[in-house]
Length: 235
Ligand code: C5P
Image (cartoon, rainbow, N blue to C red; front, side, top):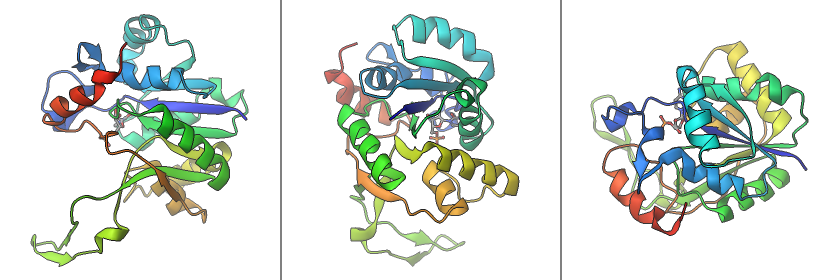
């Protein structure tokens, strides 16, 4: 079994309202993306691909990948304007087309507290179900709003899951679904990779093992919380 992990760090972090893009933000003194790189490095994935903004490729290679000794990185690909473009570029990078992967794991660098347990479960789940995503039950009640900001619907909380990464897919399935997505050119509703599979194929996505500590650092208040969770990671 050959597994590729794609780590996405090409966002602008606009919701953080900070000068530095969030993937370079230091958490307990270490750049955010180093945490998930280290955890994937120590997992059983074979290769790692990293997506970063085009202008930062050299910087990341020298100051992150080499500096922190991440040896499984096969290539750094250029990010796109949107998350799905970053994924597509990484999936079709020349270095990857030469290899034959069975499975691809796609992970947001913005989830630095991902654990080895989540990665291992995603690998097992991806092999078994072809499309598998870490999930946790929503702690909050969720409401669907109408266009005037009134509640239109309250789905039963027992059916509501918050979806995390790494999401795991059969490599060919994922590549073909992304190719079809770009051919169709309709990107509405695509905020994660599972949505691409759901939109472009008839494979059902299995919701699997996630952890509440695997939060996505999105707004500035997440920084204090994640630094607490990351104290157990010694780098
Ligand atoms: O914006 P959002 O929180 O959904 O971003 C999730 C992940 O996708 C982040 O790790 C971010 O760096 C990445 N991303 C990317 N390319 C983009 C936008 C986001 O790699 N154009």
